[in-house]
Image (cartoon, rainbow, N blue to C red; front, side, top):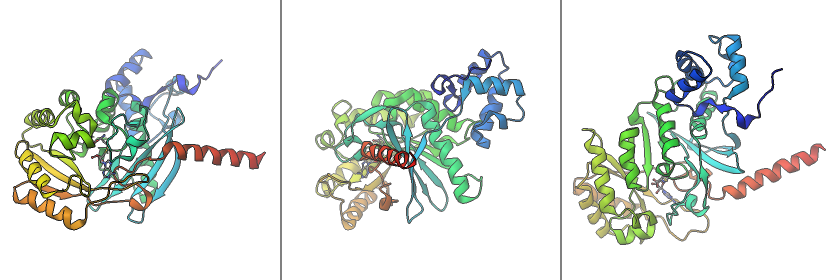
Length: 373
Ligand code: SAH
């Protein structure tokens, strides 16, 4: 008798990096090359049904179907912005929802991936922080986002070409607070049998969890972005409360150690432009002198407002003045183009009312069910 295990008892193969996949097959008494075969089917061909894995024997396919699964988060909503940005609200177990955003540009396509449901850090200007913290995503839920996006974008763009060329861990959550799962996921993204992205095409953005920046260097050396947002501790304590634990000095030292290990790398420092808060010309001068101490570039992010927040976006002329001061001091600086704000897909707007919307989705389902009965 072939008893099917309940879904939750099966191993979700999306969550296994190469060593874990090899261990999984070893436990089944199979050779390690099965791991690379199956990883290629899953991540490169985009298959989620064992029956389609034609170079795997029938009996092994059956054994896999009873002990493993390839399951991605389900879609609660799927919105397309006028500028081509696409945002998904995804459901994950525990009545939770996360958001994922795809940003197409001329020379690349960037997928912005979530690492946690909510966030513990509570940065004062961020919508995710306002909704509180629910839990870490597991590796399969992080990798599942990339798998799902690749599949859906291939349908949208009618091609299997590399539509997702870059991944940024800049969605909901603080990736370094979910270290092991995020590292395993980024390793799968880089693996030749996985998504095969080069490490400079994967960027991890952190509010500055100093010990984990050092640990990242050992575990998975991807591009690093740091959410700085203020050029002195007094102001940063207010905007990014994590700064009380890891002040700017310690943070910049960790960044120096990170780039020292690679002779070309720079750290990107993100700086959200908040009118009358951190956009004084004095702040620009302070930031410029901090930037002299680390191989760096600065990305100025015009603040994206959301319901219930008092901050305002700095004017364009203010942002340009700020940029000029940095540039005059020799700092490499760009201003982030705001994308997808018509569908609330811009930085910092993710899942501000996720719980609400999840409930809304539930109510919708209930109504549909009532109609059918
Ligand atoms: N926790 C990580 C990654 C998530 S946030 C981090 O702090 O880096 C991704 C980026 O969006 C961060 O730089 C964050 O500070 C910025 N951000 C958050 N809220 C924003 C908002 N309302 N407007 C513009 N950028 C915002």
